Length: 291
Ligand code: PSU
Ligand code: MN
Image 1: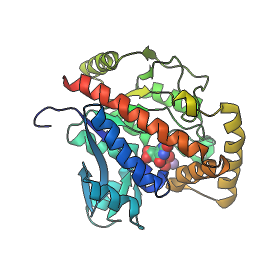
Image 2: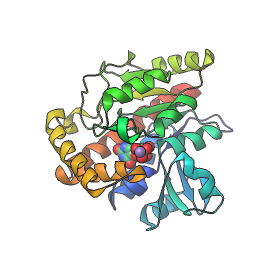
Image 3: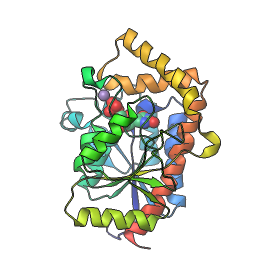
């Protein structure tokens, strides 16, 4: 930061709760590698040894990936964890990662998919803390949209209400994480990192506090057909309801059910899009911080 070099923040709930071992560690290190290959510096964010950390050593990433007792850290858990009253190892969600990374001045962040409005949220009120955080933390967030396990039209509406511009990276459509298409539009198609940076600078220059969301479709060769996925998701949602899964357990439960039902194909898609998003974020960071 002192030398004004480009930095890309990375989340860690995907390491502790999003992917099974050993893929979690492999992927976390691969993401850091993609950011470096793109000419930027990776800063994986997590709770390590009871401290909030922005930027980890390889050993710390490995400790996080292999520790049995880890918490999924959302913004509401940050004070508890840093006070030493919670779990001493935690993977930070998109929301908690944005909070910590922005607090130390980082502006670019890469992840797989943001959380959003869950299906049935009109009765359960299950809306990810990622959404209100996107509404109030100024960062460029690179993702593949929100997962199809969510209510995507409602998530899209929520972002609009919150004043979060949704840009489509070389696409006109809001991607559905595993799938290329959701049937929903983006606010602007962008083809270059320069266009993303121009929008972000003027968004913040106009006094808006919110994030700028850059949505990147999954690489076409690993994308899963939306119709095929829908059957799997319907089944996963029914299982979640029968098992009485609630709160922070819902997203990891659904992701895992989809992974098992697709014989790991969804995981391969997840890893490929994470890597691609890290590359796109590095290009945006290089542009943002100047060469
Ligand atoms: N998307 C993934 N894998 C993940 C997550 C999202 O492909 O592990 C995590 C992110 O950290 C995101 C969180 O912030 O799930 C959302 O959880 P919740 O719905 O409980 O807010
Ligand atoms: Mn939730």
